[in-house]
Length: 235
Image (tube, rainbow, N blue to C red; front, side):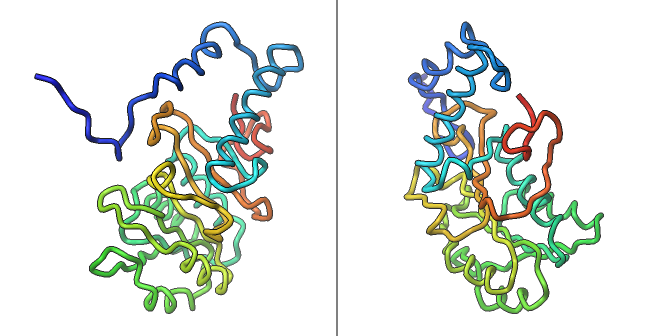
């Protein structure tokens, strides 16, 4: 019997071209990108090329791309890091978010934040009328996924972001399920931060990014050697 893989919303099979591009760096072209010798500089140049390619795919600037290990890490980084520097103490997440969004928001309750769900209608879309009322309470952060991994429903993120900005809240979207399946433009979505991940688009597991407006004051999730503009240390 021949097996057919159909679970691409969960993860995708690594494309042979991606593997071919990766193998030299895994076998013979080792180099720490923070090192100043030839091998280190080559690794750094490769990372910056990748950063530019990710930025182009996301309608962003290379300087806005912060590499992380996973989408889960990027979502934790956005929610915990952005909310931490806000005066407001309410965090809003849609009722249909992935656990890697809702659970970090709930974890922030230990630091004095409240975490509230945003209702969706029978079509699975965020209900804007109740959201407007929720935003009357000072809100640190609002997080709504672009495309749902279970239903495929696509949210009007730009409109939701407009409401968030008008209230003074920061806006994050998990766009992991949108990248590669629909036009994606960080600027047009009008959000402060956006999560993407490679393993949903035939890239390797263990590579993701947070696209971040450089004007946002965010606390690092990982401290160390100062990689990724000092926001996500690690080689």
